[in-house]
Picture 1 (tube, rainbow, N blue to C red):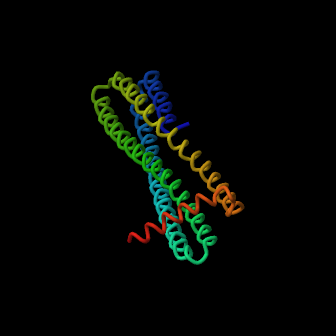
Picture 2: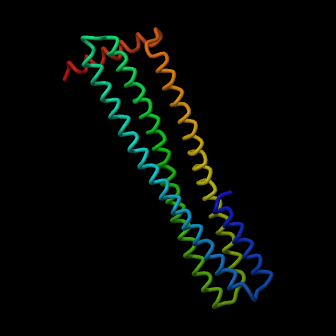
Length: 216
């Protein structure tokens, strides 16, 4: 369950207590606001983790691209003297190109999740600020109707944050699936490196690389 979903349930429960026991409403609301502040703090920690993981992905992408460039260079250098070795180099280049592309897709998902989580945190803080103002007003007017209004706002707040929780879950599952796919692809390429099925495709790509090099 999303931390913000639990927060919503907690706040509703607290406000129900306010209705049932007017003498404790001030203390209950203060405790609830403290709980909300803690949940927002946890969300900020998660956002920092998303940013950290995104930076790691960026580094991995850089490394894969550097490896692809290295094998491209080797393919061109071997093309005139050893076509078989040149084709092997092209195949290696393909592996790193695929890894790089997959990591870039994952990085884009991380970026989307980070933006969404940052927006949700900002919304949460705005809600907190509004609720604190309402608490001040409640103390002045001794009105339970303000507490009921806060409940409606919190329900809307929880719905927004629930979507963010599903998005992060989907990213986690996608990352695990992608890691498995990449591993399988690498094993197949190593075993079938010079298979007839790939031979013509590799020759074609080698020719394209040589043509590009001649145009420089």
